[in-house]
Image 1 (cartoon, one colour):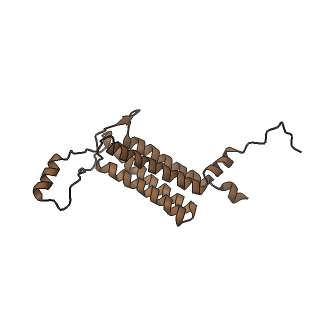
Image 2 (spheres, one colour; image 1 turned 90 degrees about the vertical axis):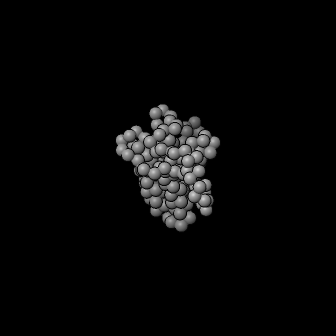
Length: 180
């Protein structure tokens, strides 16, 4: 008979990580993190009035890739294979965001293009008017920063976090269940 005054032994951190970062949970956490970043980007654009540059758009597509990889991992692939896809997509997001942050810090040159929303099927005169009225969004401008990091810098850090969650879920997730 167990002593009622003695608390039961606490599970180890590794055991807790195994439960929290079960492969399916890891996929859902990574998808939720990328979804939150996309929502934040759209809020900055549509509520904050900050038009995205071309590198910002590339970063969004990388997060769509993370979400898609997580969904494929949840529905079609074994969970652990999905985690590898998510880690690869998150590393791509980290690469684009890191490149963008480097452009903002003038470590290297960015792309020559800019973004413009032009109406399809418009006349040449209308297109010229739209181009003249469209503000040029430069990739090396920092419209917002927090603690010295721009949105691209924060995106790089969070993308690295997503990669870490995917890798930790791959390594530790479900380990207790696999051992029993």
